Image 1 (cartoon, rainbow, N blue to C red):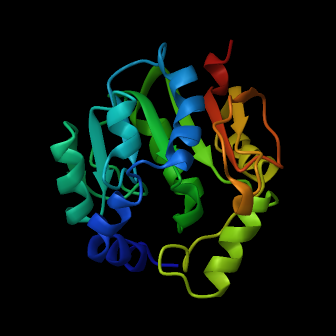
Image 2 (cartoon, rainbow, N blue to C red):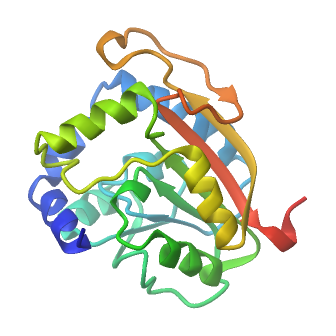
Length: 219
């Protein structure tokens, strides 16, 4: 996949995508585990692939990075400082960031290892990497994969991997997962109520949050 193809979709549909979050039970469920882990995370905070900034603004993220100007405009309106760019080439000097967020972005990355290496470069000593992902083996992962195969514009270029595969890739790039949350165990066709997050990872969950740090700074 080419990041320009993904960016074009979210550029053309930025307001439509943003409006989807209004009064969304799914958004509330996915936000909950992030709110549980965010309090102690160091600043400044950067979100790679911020989109319109719905999550970042709620998590106190100062910097929004995205290749779609229309999405960045919405993030700016939510109080985030916009940065045009991609995760493979962060426009930030080394060791300047306390926490990097990658939320719903991994599945669209052309070169995730390069993004992880860039995160290593910009993170200050003791910094954290926070990942939010849809596990590929979950009912939600399978649903989104079907949407991709059907040509859904939002998921046409997405690839949903397992938590185990992402954890392995993080380790290859020098990161250790030190905390995790899982949620969204309701089936996509039967989403009816709010769910409290569970500690740890679960391949059957529709959404998982991983908190990672450089191996040499792991507690």
